[in-house]
Length: 124
Image 1 (cartoon, rainbow, N blue to C red):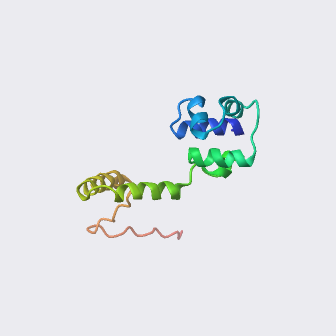
Image 2: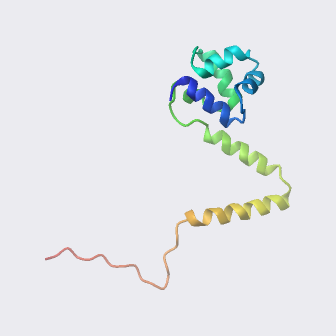
Image 3: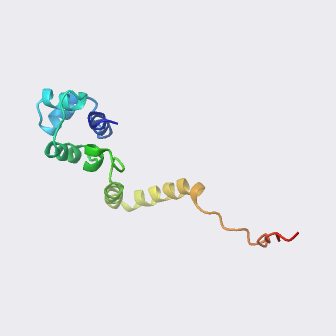
Protein backbone atom coordinates (compact mmCIF):
# COMPACT_ATOMS: atom_id res chain seq x y z
CA UNK A 1 0.00 0.00 0.00
CA UNK A 2 1.36 3.40 -0.97
CA UNK A 3 1.53 6.45 1.33
CA UNK A 4 -1.55 8.11 -0.17
CA UNK A 5 -3.52 4.85 0.09
CA UNK A 6 -2.62 4.53 3.77
CA UNK A 7 -3.76 8.11 4.30
CA UNK A 8 -7.14 7.32 2.72
CA UNK A 9 -7.45 4.15 4.82
CA UNK A 10 -6.58 6.11 7.97
CA UNK A 11 -9.21 8.74 7.17
CA UNK A 12 -11.89 6.11 6.61
CA UNK A 13 -11.10 4.16 9.79
CA UNK A 14 -11.27 7.45 11.70
CA UNK A 15 -14.84 7.91 10.47
CA UNK A 16 -14.37 10.66 7.90
CA UNK A 17 -16.39 9.67 4.85
CA UNK A 18 -14.91 12.26 2.54
CA UNK A 19 -11.63 14.03 1.98
CA UNK A 20 -13.49 17.33 2.44
CA UNK A 21 -14.50 16.33 6.00
CA UNK A 22 -10.96 15.21 6.79
CA UNK A 23 -9.38 18.39 5.45
CA UNK A 24 -11.72 20.51 7.58
CA UNK A 25 -11.07 18.39 10.68
CA UNK A 26 -7.30 18.58 10.24
CA UNK A 27 -7.35 22.27 9.33
CA UNK A 28 -5.66 21.80 5.96
CA UNK A 29 -6.91 23.34 2.72
CA UNK A 30 -8.90 20.81 0.72
CA UNK A 31 -6.62 21.08 -2.31
CA UNK A 32 -3.58 20.27 -0.19
CA UNK A 33 -5.24 17.35 1.56
CA UNK A 34 -6.77 15.89 -1.59
CA UNK A 35 -3.36 16.01 -3.29
CA UNK A 36 -1.90 14.07 -0.37
CA UNK A 37 -4.68 11.51 -0.47
CA UNK A 38 -4.87 11.02 -4.23
CA UNK A 39 -1.10 10.73 -4.54
CA UNK A 40 -0.50 13.74 -6.76
CA UNK A 41 1.68 15.24 -4.00
CA UNK A 42 3.46 13.63 -1.11
CA UNK A 43 3.76 14.97 2.40
CA UNK A 44 6.52 15.22 4.97
CA UNK A 45 6.82 13.77 8.43
CA UNK A 46 5.52 16.92 10.15
CA UNK A 47 2.24 16.68 8.23
CA UNK A 48 2.23 12.91 8.74
CA UNK A 49 2.36 13.43 12.50
CA UNK A 50 -0.69 15.67 12.31
CA UNK A 51 -2.60 13.16 10.17
CA UNK A 52 -1.59 10.22 12.38
CA UNK A 53 -2.77 11.98 15.54
CA UNK A 54 -6.03 13.19 14.05
CA UNK A 55 -6.86 9.83 12.46
CA UNK A 56 -5.58 7.85 15.48
CA UNK A 57 -3.18 5.68 13.56
CA UNK A 58 0.45 4.86 14.19
CA UNK A 59 2.87 7.32 12.58
CA UNK A 60 5.20 4.47 11.49
CA UNK A 61 2.34 2.72 9.74
CA UNK A 62 1.15 5.87 7.99
CA UNK A 63 4.56 7.01 6.80
CA UNK A 64 6.31 3.68 6.15
CA UNK A 65 3.63 1.01 6.21
CA UNK A 66 5.34 -0.85 9.07
CA UNK A 67 3.49 -2.56 11.89
CA UNK A 68 -0.21 -2.37 12.65
CA UNK A 69 -2.36 0.58 11.64
CA UNK A 70 -3.45 1.36 15.18
CA UNK A 71 -1.70 1.15 18.50
CA UNK A 72 -3.66 -1.59 20.20
CA UNK A 73 -2.48 -0.58 23.66
CA UNK A 74 -4.01 2.87 23.28
CA UNK A 75 -7.21 1.36 21.87
CA UNK A 76 -7.44 -0.95 24.90
CA UNK A 77 -6.84 2.01 27.26
CA UNK A 78 -9.58 3.96 25.48
CA UNK A 79 -11.95 1.00 25.75
CA UNK A 80 -11.21 0.47 29.45
CA UNK A 81 -11.59 4.17 30.21
CA UNK A 82 -14.99 4.13 28.51
CA UNK A 83 -15.96 0.94 30.38
CA UNK A 84 -14.90 2.47 33.71
CA UNK A 85 -17.11 5.50 33.08
CA UNK A 86 -20.25 3.34 32.73
CA UNK A 87 -22.68 2.90 35.62
CA UNK A 88 -22.04 -0.33 37.60
CA UNK A 89 -25.16 -2.09 36.27
CA UNK A 90 -24.08 -1.52 32.66
CA UNK A 91 -20.55 -2.63 33.50
CA UNK A 92 -21.94 -5.91 34.83
CA UNK A 93 -24.10 -6.40 31.72
CA UNK A 94 -21.23 -5.70 29.33
CA UNK A 95 -18.86 -7.91 31.33
CA UNK A 96 -21.30 -10.81 31.00
CA UNK A 97 -21.60 -10.22 27.26
CA UNK A 98 -17.82 -10.22 26.91
CA UNK A 99 -17.49 -13.42 28.95
CA UNK A 100 -20.01 -15.12 26.66
CA UNK A 101 -18.22 -13.88 23.56
CA UNK A 102 -14.90 -15.19 24.89
CA UNK A 103 -16.16 -18.69 25.74
CA UNK A 104 -15.42 -20.24 22.33
CA UNK A 105 -11.81 -19.05 22.57
CA UNK A 106 -11.09 -20.26 26.10
CA UNK A 107 -9.02 -23.36 26.59
CA UNK A 108 -11.17 -26.32 27.51
CA UNK A 109 -10.39 -28.04 30.80
CA UNK A 110 -9.58 -31.71 30.35
CA UNK A 111 -12.40 -34.02 31.37
CA UNK A 112 -11.66 -35.21 34.91
CA UNK A 113 -13.49 -38.54 34.34
CA UNK A 114 -11.14 -39.64 31.55
CA UNK A 115 -7.47 -40.35 32.32
CA UNK A 116 -5.01 -38.75 29.91
CA UNK A 117 -4.21 -40.90 26.88
CA UNK A 118 -0.93 -42.78 27.09
CA UNK A 119 1.61 -42.26 24.37
CA UNK A 120 2.13 -45.28 22.15
CA UNK A 121 5.56 -46.78 22.31
CA UNK A 122 7.64 -46.62 19.16
CA UNK A 123 9.21 -50.07 19.67
CA UNK A 124 9.15 -52.55 16.81
